[in-house]
Amino acid sequence: MKNKPIYKKILKIMKAINSIEKKGHNDYDNYSYAADADIKTAVRKELINNGLIFKHEILEEKTRGDIVMGKMNVLVRIKVGYTFTDVDTGDTYEGFYYGHGTDKGDKGLYKAITGSIKYILTSTFLIPTGDDPEKTPEKEEPFKGNEYVRVAPSIKERNIDKAMNSDLTDMEKLKYILNGMGGNTESSALLLLKDKAGIKNEEGKSFEKFKDIPQTKIATALTKLTK
Image (cartoon, rainbow, N blue to C red; front, top):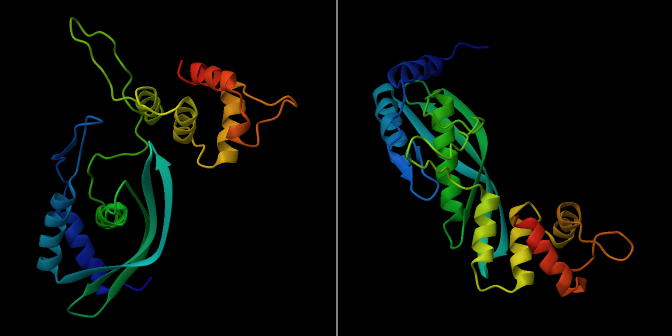
């Protein structure tokens, strides 16, 4: 590998930024995270000090919309190309990363871009933030002395809670719960319905359409899936 000067500058930045404090906090899921502004502020300072320019561009963009609780939920998947350029020599360091963002409005793309840039910056300079996606979550401890300790509910549990406390019909509740379990299409949702709740047609197979499922079986499915 050719020893380009830009590598030395990247190394200097890695030495300069030891870690970034997690100042952001998600109240809904009760966890802390390294905020976008804090990461960009720390990295920007060192990029300027070392004469590096950072640029990014969207190479691919895919958008998918799903109806969730009667509202459109938009998932955006992007491929982001990035380049670090040494202003003194013209040397470049390039790569790409895939990012995702979801929103009920028009902010899915911006969330995908923000998440991608955060990952690119922290990964390029190996900046620890404590946000480890493979970390095993803490187990729930029902009692600790006289204090009740509650962990954030899983996505599946939140979907069930939202559905069962909504004004949706039983069919709509069932579809919403199955969507949260990975049934993003009608066929995949019906397969889940058969595997997870034992709801099948007279031939012992999964139903082909939701409209073909009797109301009694819908009620049975809701009971089994919400236990």
